[in-house]
Length: 607
Image (cartoon, rainbow, N blue to C red; front, side, top):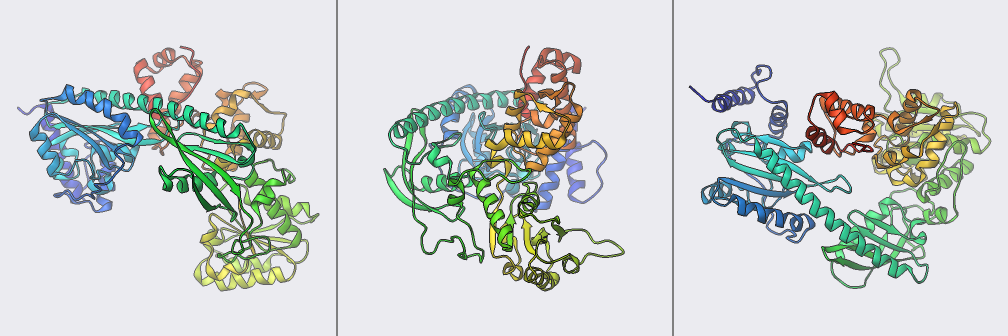
């Protein structure tokens, strides 16, 4: 009689063949996570009988991940000596960075299938495997022999889990345990998770050492003088007032990339072009800590505008004119009716939009969905004293059976003339066959004194034939790049909701931790729902939706989101008492902790 594990392996193997032959699978034969990975692998055209993966022999062997994993791997290597098991660490992109093997036969097999340092085991190259699935789905998993997409991997089983930066929640890599197929090994996943937690703890200690070194370097330089200074680490950004008033989150990224090119070169100088077109002279030095390189200390000098740099009334290489972002930022807040914010990038775009509204300058406004592009246009238009609200034509609006969809006709039909404004929403969605007619309609409206504005996600997405219709361009910052405005935005949005609703101080921290992919629009929706569900005169932490209590960095399936929401609700009802919540859910307290880690749930704990 076949053992349960052998029978299961054969069932999975038959299901895999049916899947590859496009046959319908019996219900619940293959675990959902494995079937999802098979489908991704098949879509990517992954081979089933040969392992072909990229190789990258040169990599940073002193990276923080490798340094943190080394003592954990050293300990595991001693424990696994002589056993048919191997432990492997990859970076976040699937590149194998270290491997320790307990016996020579398994080591030889892993070499044959290229599961070795320098090779890439991401799902997009190998198909279904423990490392690939853990990185793709951002959660622990076990892939047994026949569940592997590639037949060359079916003689082994593996358990893997993502390694996260406990400060930022970002996935930094993956830990994998591989062994020969055999009886069920329930401790595989537990061993991997324990190793992951050890690595994450060491990485946290590194982060603490790095942060102390960066803070000390920052304080030494800013103690004297008021020149702009910026300290950039992986988990920390420090800026004095002179720097923060003139830089955005995107500028931080550009400066960090420029600093990383210098490496250990001491006191290097370099000019960097910022996102708004302004240039800054940067003097950089690397900051080291007891745990290795901590980051970079940048001393900045904002230079005069160069002749080839776009300025007020000057066309840039994209064909648009850009206002001086530094000039707008230095001038302080620029309030608009019904809006809130003092972030330098927000001030700059507010001033640009206001000036364009006053001068009737055709403007292209770009930014992520929900950042408030149309709202900003309406506020600036109202500030001019106009009596009519802007007319909005959406190039991405669906066609109807009776009227179809003709954006050019809609633009021509809009009222035109002084005091009027016309917004072409989703300008990048104008079809090639409509571009000429739309451009003509915009030019005609502008010639009659209408203020013409186009909105879209990225300025580079504007069709070339429409580019000449807009003389200036401005970017609206994402909410995650202007979190200093969050308290003011919350107050502003609550005033719109009405009813004298307030927010408890404890509500702001979870709001700050959220990424806000839907930007201000998402924040408004969250506050509206919380206000409707509140049990007191103000919004409390427990009134926020479950997603605001979770700091996970990946998209969840419907089932996972439901599980997370149930867990958060139980914890809220138990006032954060994990033991009580576990009892009410009929699970163990250990499972509560594991699920909270998996979903990044953060709640005040009382038990």
